[in-house]
Image 1 (cartoon, helix red, strand yellow):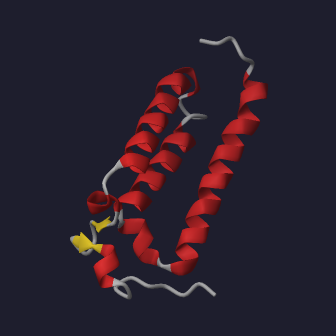
Image 2: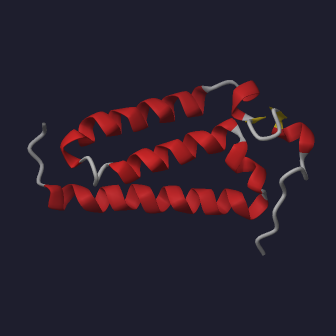
Length: 104
């Protein structure tokens, strides 16, 4: 679409995946409940979509637009959904300790 060679794009894709994984690791250092909250699921979905880019390289623009849409919804969703835990079926902030994990 923009006629940019893949060799110039791949380092940025790798950087996005590594920083996303790093963000997940930082959040998991405090609690595993983050994985099941709306905000955690949004980051996991973005990371999964980014991991699909090398597999569907010809459709990378569509996949990256999907990443951008998920990021927009994830960062602007109301706290009611951002902190909602799909595992506990309630707001995670009200039930700290439910899925706490100490990775230290």
